[in-house]
Length: 422
Image 1: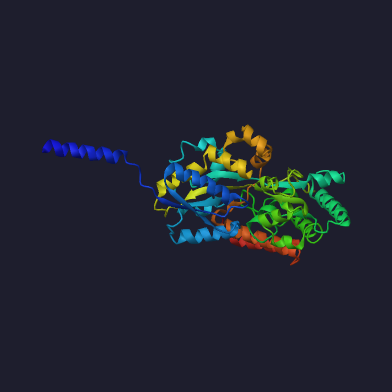
Image 2: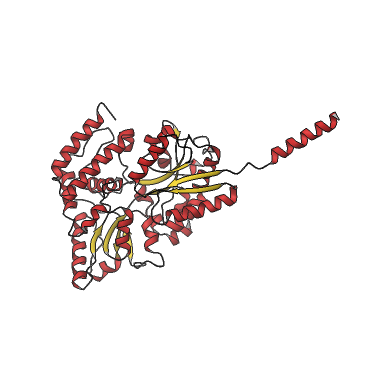
C-alpha cells in the first residue's frame, strides 16, 4: 500500500509538471492609425494559435492626447481590465510608476533594438516599455504633378509654399477645383506639437525647452516660423486643416486633393495600396528647412511601444505577448503591411522590406537624427507643457493673437510651470 501511494504521488507530480499552463484572457489597448488595428489583430491571431491565450483589442481614438488622458485615468484607478498599453515614446517618464519593469524579462532581446530607443523607454534604470515601431515624418509629394509643371522637390518651407501655390493654381485653372497645396496636422493636440517643433527648430528657433531646462521658445525665429504657417491657412492649406489630425490629412492627400503632405511613414503603404487613387504617383522626401541662421531640416521623433500594467492579473502572459509583438518576425510583418519603421536594427537590411516598402531603408538616418520632444527634460510636466505649446501655436494659426504675443505668453506660462525645476 505504501508503495502504491508513493507511485501514485510520483505519477500525479509528473502529470502536473508536464501539464500546459492554463490559457488566460488578455486585453491590449491601442489607438493606432491607418490599418494599424487590422494588422495588430492579424498578429494577435497568430499569437493566440501559438500560445492558446485569447487577446482582445480595446480600440480608442487615434489622438495621442486623448489616449494619454484615458490611460492615466485607467492606471490611476488601478484598472486590471487592461493588461497591455500601446504607448507613445514620450510617455515613459509620466507613466513609469504604474508599469511593470521589463528589464529582466527582456534581457535576451533588447540588444536587437536600437539602443537609443531602448534608452528612451528606460526610467530610473527600469525598462517600462518595449518598442514595436519608431517614427519620423516625411514630406509626401505628388511626383506626377511636380513633373507636369517642371517643379523641383522643395528643400525649404518657402520653396514648398511657392511650389504648392504654383501647382495648385495651375491645376485649379485646368478644372481641378478641389486641389490644395499642402496638408498637415493642425488640430490642437499632440500632433501639432510635433509639426510645430519642426517648423520652429528648422527655422533656428530652438526646441521649445532646451536639454538644460531653459525655456527657449520666445524668440524671433520661432515667431517668424509661426507667422509663416499662419500665412498658409486658406492660401495653400485648406481652412479645415486647423482641425486635421493624421487621418484627416491622409484622407485629403490620398483622394488626390493635395500636392504636398506632412505625415508619418504609415501613410506610404496606404498611399500605394491597390485601391489608392495616387498609387505610383507620389514619393517622399525629408521635410524642408527654414531660412534662419541655424536653419536645418527637422523631423520630430515619434514611435510606439508596449507596456504592461502593474495592475494586470496576468503579468507573465502579458510580458510574453509584448515580446511576441516586438519580435523581429512580427516587426517585419508589421513593416511589410504598414510601412511603419522597425526598431530592430537588422530589419533595415532586409531585402523583402527594401523591395516592398522602400521608404524604410531610406528613413533610417532620418529617424536616427530626429529631434525628440522635450519630454525627457519636462518629465511628468511634459503633457501640460506640450498642451501650452500647441495651444499657442493653434491660436496663432487661427488668428487669435500674434505669434510674438502668443510666444511671450507661452514663455511666461512655461516658466511658471517649471517653477523651481522640471
